[in-house]
Length: 361
Image (cartoon, rainbow, N blue to C red; front, side, top):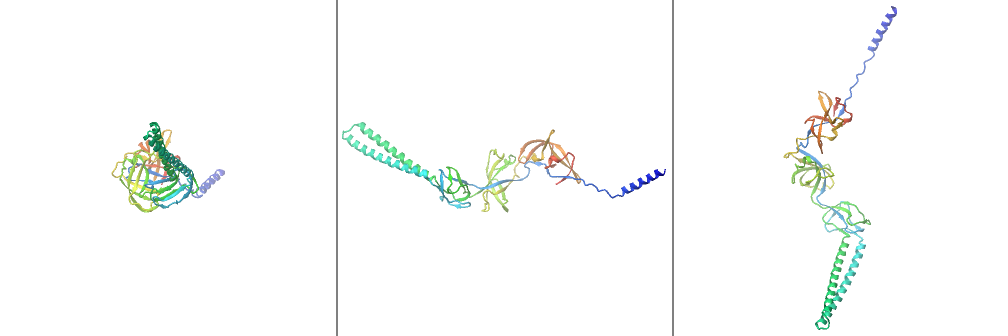
């Protein structure tokens, strides 16, 4: 009996000690942060901005029309040149040799023509006196005619060889600025090989590609706004000058060009540009829902997204089956499973679980 009492007392004391032995720390629940986006209509925005590249409206690749060693190269990057200015020339050894040979052939042809003419005049005189036959006279005429044709041919050969020499010179075809150089003096170059690029246009164009979802809302002479990251706090007016009727197979977009109406010397060829199109007066597939391609997952049951359901201060993700349509530049078209305004997770799909609590970022 005494032993039982002692054991009971020990248990009571031990329990009191454990209950008073300090407060246990409450574990904080970790919530995985996720990025999200609201589901919206494709092209539903009134103003859409697309990236492009600035370039002058006339770009000329400068090249020789013959092969040889460059002996003169008067071009530097950024150099302003005038139309007709000599920019480069070749040694032209082969062309000069061919030209000298053509001169020799021309002199020989001229000599033969003069000899044939003198012979024709002599035979004609004898024929008129009855001292030679008609066949001799006709033979002399034919001989002179052949010699005359040979002279004309040789003369054309000289002109052609002179042009070949001129092919070894590069003259500025227009006023402009040297934008690129790809050759040096003493370098061996081939006919047609570009040695420099001349920007000679007075207008500045922006080249860009537009997706099929908006291309029908773009027309020639449509006014747009252009800004450049290299030229802060300044916006330029521009007009659409070219709209391609067919898609570019390399980019899956429709090439478009816009021309800056009020150009500035600060705009330089190659600058990145942002072109803003106002589609307020055009209908651009406003009934097509779209979600980013990276927000769509796939498992054995098909395609899905993680739909975000908010309850007060907490949020959970729900695995939502969807059906997709075409892939546009903005993402997948949604044919069923979502509606406008719903929120979906756009990153970390591989780490999310159906019903998991998350923290929105």
